[in-house]
Length: 590
Ligand code: UD2
Ligand code: MN
Image 1: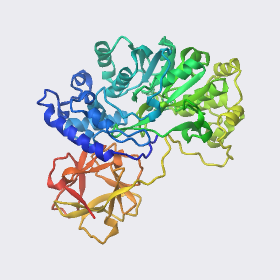
Image 2: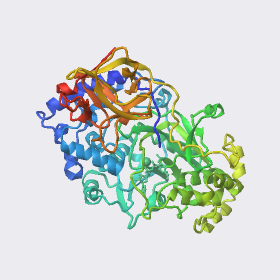
Image 3: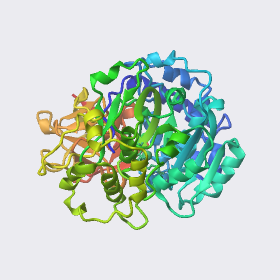
Image 4: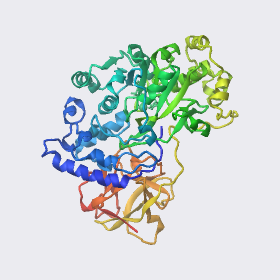
């Protein structure tokens, strides 16, 4: 699960715009009888009343966003980089607990509230498309375990806000036995009070995992089409019509939207490149470039060998006929490849629809385990290998020899599905659907699991120079030699001729010392001082804003870089609540 490096067109313009808007919001919010961020309570039912709604902002936020010039028909998100600013201990707690429990910035998620505008990331051609008047109605199934309340509610509201009501038959929320109190009574109260009768909550008595969870959700559904979403998504403009239309034409077509990226650290929404699903012999999903032969379909649909798993639509009867999911799979992992193989091998097709865009919060780690602590990915992969992969399961065992003798439970029901549907061989699938797949020799190393392809492009440098602290008049440098893999930073006497003191500030908002390492913050322990680390290119912990009033603001931590003790020769620095003091003033001077 990695995000990709993506060029932030128009960020400068938008951040300026948002700074102005936020300033207005902070300074006028109270007087206008609305809460400023400082007073936004943490989660719980009270939070609902106080959610600031940027969507309906009277100062024209929407227009400001829409005014940004599009790059190739799409543009990135437009949040202020300072959306995660820490003002007090309560903010700190929300942020830190949020990372701990959910692995994303819950402080920002709460501040966004349940509705927000998104940049329309579709190609401009999509906007003029006309879809059939009569389309099948959808049951949206969202399975969740310990989801952050605001992220779950934003998922639900984004569907209600951006879908023609006549196409939504119902939204089924499957609570997979969550342990967080607000997902029980508070959710029920909210659904009752604020959501239409279309939204239903189904509760699992024990933790089932997302695979059986979705099957339970589907068994309650009565709409013609099932649409599955993760519980931390936001659907974009006219997302559903282009998914329903191909299913309407052919009920054995399964469709996925393009999964746009919501940053786990900033909640910024940015477009994904058009890629399609593949996998490696470790049975990890990966994104592949789209072969040019696939780019010729008149409606832009792209045939995809696999799906990522979380976001897709499928005729409900076809879902049942095709054997739903493998109910012997637990918690997380593998079901996406299993259903992909099954669709293709048993007479269906799987398409990615570029005109349908849904954002998803991509996290760097999964914040939950399985109840027994097992590796459910291995268990699930083993089941799918034994049912679907014929002799090619050897490719998997070559990489995972320890799994060769591992028990995987009873698969007879799944083998019966394959037999009943008269499915093709795995060789047929590889030859016809995924010819790019290489058959590897036993000694090859496993490939890295990958969510979104990382670009190779180096971001453009905007500024270069020493980073001088205005209070102590010293420069930020590596404590040891900067050529090492990582290390602490301190302030020392500035030396204009020393290249080891030179920082580059680039368009990704990274600060790179001596062309080698990035200034980085620990996501989990935001009280740790900043340090030098290998640049990862995913923003967040390496994203700094160097702007007005000379402060050096860390985007995912929500604090400013400060000199700890101005008279100490040790020159220690740390992150602190931004207060505009001299110790927090920095200048990047060439
Ligand atoms: C990806 C998929 C995910 C699923 C997974 C493989 C996308 C965007 N996401 O992982 O949908 O296919 O690969 O299995 O393609 N959940 C439960 N019960 C559990 C565990 C998870 O309900 O025991 C929910 C969870 O709250 C979330 C969904 O299942 O809504 C997917 O889990 P995830 O977001 O941790 O998976 P992700 O996106 O890393
Ligand atoms: Mn997810």
